[in-house]
Amino acid sequence: MTKAKVSKHSKKHHYVPQGILRRFCFQNDTTWYLSRERFPGDPSPRNIGSIFCKRHFNSFQKEDGTKDDAVERFFGKEFDNYIPEWTAHLEVSQETNSPVAFGGAERRRFVQFFYNHMKRSPDFIEPIVAEATEETFAAESIEKLERQVRPLTDEERSKFQSTDFQRRVAGNSRVENFSKQSVKILETINEMSIALATPARANKQFIVGSNPVARFEDYPRQHLSEPGVELWTTLTPRLAVGFVHSSNVDNLRLSDHQVRKLNISIAKQSRAIASTSKELLASLARVGWPTSPKAPDPEGGCENRARPGGRVGRDA
Image (cartoon, rainbow, N blue to C red; front, side, top):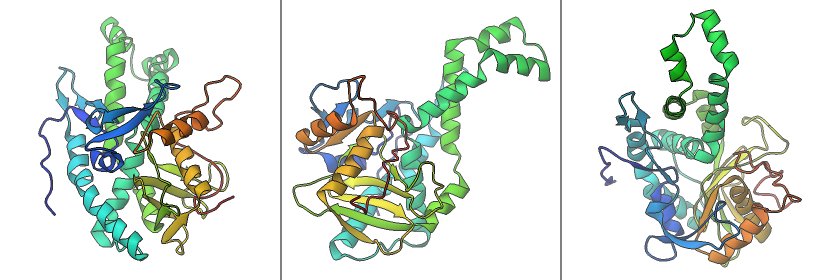
């Protein structure tokens, strides 16, 4: 395949690749977009180059302020460049009602993309990093460090208490986390079956979210390796791809209820959503982003664990 050129020094890092966002456009590179910060406002038309991205999100910042975007360039070269080819392959499997024929190195690459598609979302990783940063720079942690190593100098103590230093350490920890790949999780996902899903009715469609991978399970905190756990993401308004433990669900045609279930799960865990349909976004936001204090979000806002109960392939 012909691969797009990857910029040597990238600044705008898309955590949802534009190769996916482009399929959710209603005109050229324009999609309907809605964020929690603007809700209950209406969805607005946005160019995909300006959404689901953060400046230097995957760059390692050195002490002198210079940035190393090796991780972002890796994502672009090894994963994002393959999205059009993968999507076309999966659409053929869907249209012909045939199993996904990913094998060998291609399957391993797709598995790794899927894993990172979940992991690289700010909605997923930032709460984890924030908690770790707070714990690292807590007074108790610094006191423990001094007991185990040596007392800090005044300069070191001032540095530890600096907001800029803490922010840089947190950001670099996040990028370091991106660069590490859990072999155990990758092996577990690779052992699962790839399933495809499309809305049964032509007038129904999927959305894409800033936290794009929804997890379904039979009971809370079920282990990924157990039957009943499913991971799903949307690649086009008519194509969702999932990793499941059943080998008899190659191609699913989802009822209106099942389509809505997947869309709501993605919306609930995402800070922003996009679609070819303005009305669909507004409808999902009213359900997934309650604004009344009397109607709290049962799924915990922006956390990655959608935990809606049951699987995509079930109507219950």
